[in-house]
Length: 192
Image (tube, rainbow, N blue to C red; front, side, top):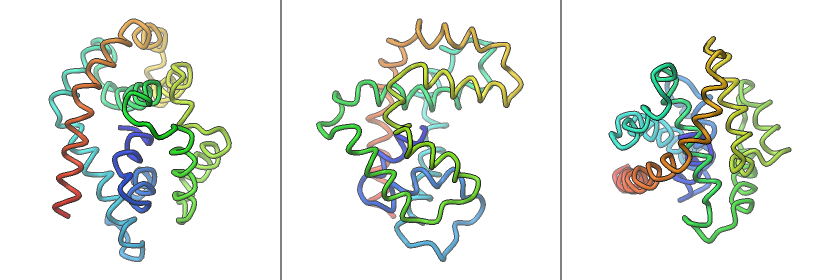
């Protein structure tokens, strides 16, 4: 999952939402100086990452990226999942997308943003980046930058084709694994 889904799965309270973003930037032990709900939010973020990587319903989707993109497929699928969720938002909730994303930026901003996340956070707020995930070009751009970092930029044209040709399949797959993840998060929240 990428940030939008992490925040949505943590929507039970503001600390969990903030952890949905900050969880990618806090490495190692979770600082006990953080508010308790933010600590839980970061722990939830890590739990979601672990569970989604193990989830057969997600793992079976990796093949849609083809053999040459098999290695980055888990990262790419996280972004595709956010794209599908944002694009078909109204199928999953009656809450307006921009109302939710504005709330996310506000509650994230109530916490100290690590320097490694400051530029991204400011960009998100300025452009409503989470809501822009609806646009496949935004997802393609982020995925392209990931491929460049991984020195796999020669596959960007292939990725662009896949994002279009496999769109309906990605949506069908999402409709299978998303409810499973929601159930896992509900159980985790009750247990912790």
